[in-house]
Length: 383
Image 1 (cartoon, rainbow, N blue to C red):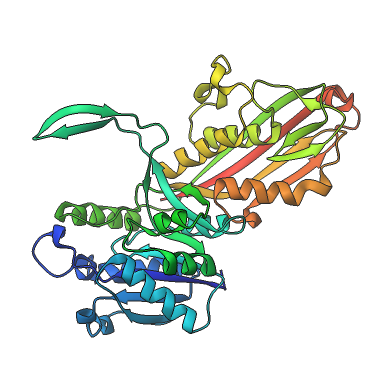
Image 2 (image 1 turned 135 degrees about the horizontal axis):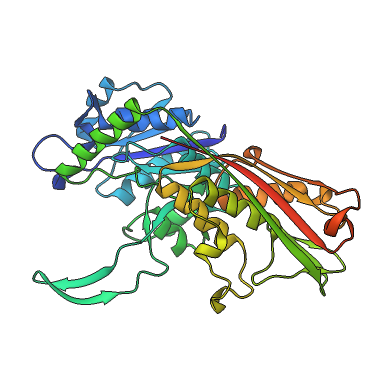
């Protein structure tokens, strides 16, 4: 993350938070909210920080630890404030990547920030989000007037990460304001990867949010790090075809693996390991093979669901290890690509992902070349 800068946007007035100073300057466990936000990025190893403030608050910033922090005066809107920070970075030493974060979100975890940064290794933009799980209603005058489909809907969070040159160009070309920087990126044609969000990454908006934030801090201080381990095992037989999906990579072979989905035996084992660590059963419980909608489905759907479930419960991937058991095809030449693919799906560093292979010394069904087995172990870390 050495060539990554973070822009923390905190120029708003936060009127919905009720009477008192702007929400980013209010006390939270003895320190301003912004102090917690800056600390979160330092813990994640982001040393280059840009804090965008209302001109009236620039003097107040001297109460913060400004090590590695550059102050920028914000504009009349959030979009204008971000643009000012981007232009300031461009005039200095432009970073390769930039993270843009709401100053009133004081609890982005190290894992959440790392996941966004990891996703930028394979795309121009990435942002954390949580799937919408509640029913959605339309209403008027306090009366329910209809419902809305929640499938495919997500609750957006920050930090939102971007290739710096791409988001700078997008901002310069964008007329007017936007809901967030993902909207500006998409207007410029940038593909945005969704990484796992966290229920703890709340944005302080209303007075009651501060009580919840205080409880989260107390929980973090009183509760030791939680570690959960899980293992997974899967088998798929060979059938007609010209390649095998293994850990998200299509490996050329004179046969394919057979299954209801794409039969990615490595990804299935890893997905089951995550479900196991959460005591949530296996893939079949969440994606029944009797359901025709999963016929031929790409296995990253299953893995993303497992990671999102872990994230929603406050866990992140500590590390994982996948072993593929087969005589053929050869795994070694593809192992690094598999690690990178799994890391991108799970939103973690490639260094946290191990993929290796072994043979069964020509014993059993794998030794006879009838199929491939996979064993996976995962460590989940959370508070």
